[in-house]
Image (cartoon, rainbow over all chains, first blue to last red; front, side, top):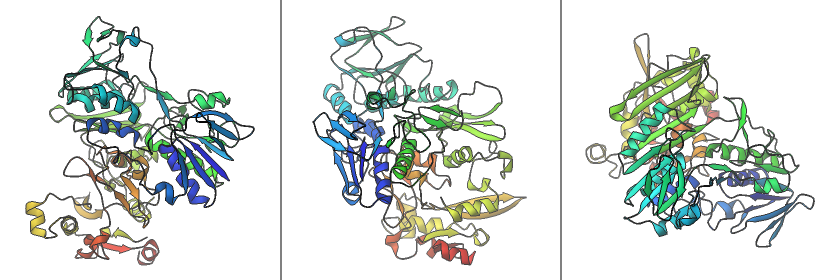
Length: 416
Length: 154
C-alpha cells in the first residue's frame, strides 16, 4: 500500500503517525514544498523575535520519521495529480504513485490588491520560515514597520518586531483587534495592553495606497514605511484540489471520514471545511488542534480503520507581551437567548467572559485568568447541562470540584 | 500503564504531596533549600471541595491520557507522549502559549512560576520507582498503580 501525503505540518504528520500505528508495512511518503522539516508554524513569530531557533521550532523529534519509517521529500511542490493513474508529479519532475492520498496543504496568505503595492520593495506576508528570513534581512532598529491586519498573525508579527525596530503600526479595516475571534469589549483589553509596547493601531482604517516609502490610509494619514507586512488573513490552500475538480465550497468538502468527493483522496486541516458543532454549519476552522485530530482520523480511515469526525468549534490560545488569552466557541453574541457573564479588572488586564445558552456553556474568553480553562472547554465540548454541576460557574472559579463526586472520580480514574 | 490515582476519602489536604513534588523537582533535593532558595513548581495540586460547610480534598495531577488533548493542541511540539505513555513537556520548546491549558479537561496543567513555560507532572520516574507525591502521602490518599489493579481496589 502506498500512502502519499501532501503537506508536512500538523495534519500531515499526525496522519502519517496514525497510518503507521495501524499499518506497519505500507509505504508512507510526505511531500513538502518547504526546505525545512516540520515546524510549529505558529512559532515563526517567536523565531522572528529571537526567542526560538530553527532547531527548537521543529515540531517533531529527530527520530520521528525514521522510527515510523516515513519518507519526507522536501522542496517538492506538487505540480499535478493524475487521479486515473493515481500519480502525483512534483515541479522537480519526481513522480509518486499512491493508493491513498491526503491533501493537507493548509492555508495561504490572502493579499488584497492595494494601489501601488508594487512600488514598495519590502512587502512580505507572515506565514512561514521563509517569510521570517526575508523580514529579518530588512529590519533594523531604525525601521518603520507597517502591518496591515490586526488579526492573530498581524499581532504576533507586531509583538515579534516591537523591540527590534523604531516603530510598529498596525492598521485594520475592522473597528477592533482580532475581529474574527473577539468582541469589542474583550478586544479592547488586548489592544490597550499591546499599545503599551511600542505598537500603534489605526483601526476602522486601512491601506488605500502604498508608495515607495510610505502607506496612505483611507482617512488620509500617511505612515512612514520601510517594511510592509501583509497580514490580512489566510485562505484554504485549495489549488491542487481545484485542479482535479474535487468538490470545494470555501474549503475542500470532506465527509465525516475525511474523504473528499474523489475516492481514495482525503483532506484534513486548514484546507478543509469542518463542521462547527456550535453554529451547526460547515466552516473553515483553521485551528492547530483541529488539524491534528482531522489528520489522525484521515490516517485511520486511509489505513482501513473506520473512524468518524464529530465536529469542532473555535479555540484559540495566544499571548502578547506577557498577556495570555484563551477563547472558545461563541464569543460575540448577536442573537437572542444568550446570557453573558463578564468579570473584569482593568487594572490587571484581567477578564473572564462566559457565554451561556439553554443551560449550556457555548463560549468563553479568558484574559490573564486562565487556570483550568480546559474544564470550560470540556463543558462546551460535552454539552454538559450547567444545572447538573455542583455550583454556578459564573460565581466561582472553575475546578474539577464542579462535578459531582461520582463523575469527578470517573474522570480521574477513567482518563481519556 | 501505572499512574497516580487519588482517593478522596483518604485525603487530608495536608499538602505534603505538593511539598515533596517541588523538592523532587528541585536542584538541591532538599526541602528547606527548595523552599528558601529555589522557585520550583508543584505539578500536583490539592483541590478543595466545600459542601454544606464541610471541606474535603483531593489531589490532582496529569492523567497521562491515552489520547492526550494537550498533545493535540500543542503548537510547538513541546508536549508529547513518550514510549512509556508518560505525557511530557520539553521546556526548551515550550512557548507558554497555554494551548494545553485550554485543552486539558482536568485542569491539570499550570503555568510555571517562571511565567514563560507550562508545568506538569512527569511521574518523576527518575526519582525512583514511586513518584515523590505517592511515596510521601501520609494517609494512602495517593496510589501508584495501573488501571486493572485499580479496579480491584476501588
